[in-house]
Structure formats: C-alpha cells, structure tokens
Length: 197
Image (cartoon, rainbow, N blue to C red; front, side):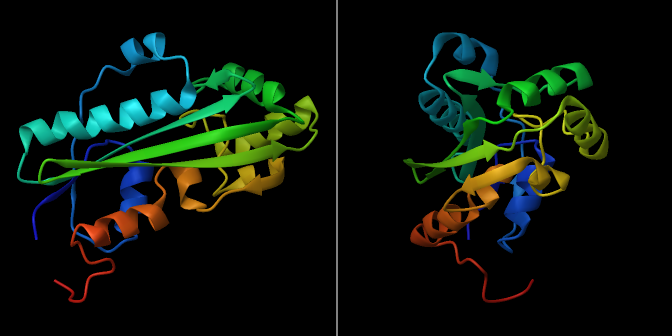
C-alpha cells in the first residue's frame, strides 16, 4: 500500500486516525489559514476549503502518497468560533453559546492518484442554561483552550449540553472516522487491516 500522510499536526486528529489501525505519518501542511478566514465568510465553504488546501499542500510534496487534510469550525448564528487560547476568551465563548444551538462543521479531503474526495459532517449541539460559575468550573477542569467552541466533549464537556445531533461522534473531536473509513476502503485501503505488522 502507498504511504498515507495526515496533513495535520493536531494531536487529536492523530489519535483519531490511529483508531483505524492503519500506518500513517503526520506532516505540517503549512497553510496560512488567516488569509482564507478573512476572504471566506461562509463557515461550510471555509472548512471545506481549508481541509482541501491542507491536503493539496502535502500532496504537492508527496504525489505518490494518499493524503488526508481536515479542518473544523464552530459556528453559532453566523458567528465563527475560533480556538479561545485563554481562560478569558473561553469564558466569553461559553457565555455566548449558553442556552443556544450551534454547529460544528468538520470537513476532510483525501487526495490519491490525482483524485480528490471531500466529505463534510455537521453536528448540531445545544448548550444547557449555565451560570458563569458553572462555566468557569468546567473550564478549570478541561482547560479546552485549544478547542474551537471552548469545550472537550470527550471529557467533562459533555456535562454542558442538553442535546447533540450527529451521524458520527468522532467528527466532534476533529475527524469523522465512519465516513473516512468508508472513503479509504473505496480507495483500496483496508480498514481495519487484515494483518498486523
């Protein structure tokens, strides 16, 4: 089988892809996301564009490989939510999401043999009505400052939500594995593999 490269330095995506049992390498795609964030206002289009550009950037360097690029955005009533990076920003984000519905848009592109496949998952989440002390308590537990939307559903973040609708819960962490496994199988990558190596 050809070399598989994940065009990402995200530890979350690496851990997710490891669940499929395939051999792969991680590589920094070096895509300047800020330019595209300024030029593309539609969150769905932006997530798909960034995922595709990351895959293309690495594929240009390794045209013999199968390359996976991915991007995720959180969006609420037309407002894009980035990674908060600080406690202050995270409190602000969760107060904004409080008692509201928002969407997590997770897109990936696979490029192999010059052909490109893009798939996108949309998860709808409704946050419960929470007090500011509850929000701060949560943030001290998970420290989700590197997560769009300021929560980690796979940890204590699950306690913030009234309702979550998704076709693939791994999409919430950063890569829709159910869909990706299907895409890889269609391209001849056996998931899970038959032999251990």
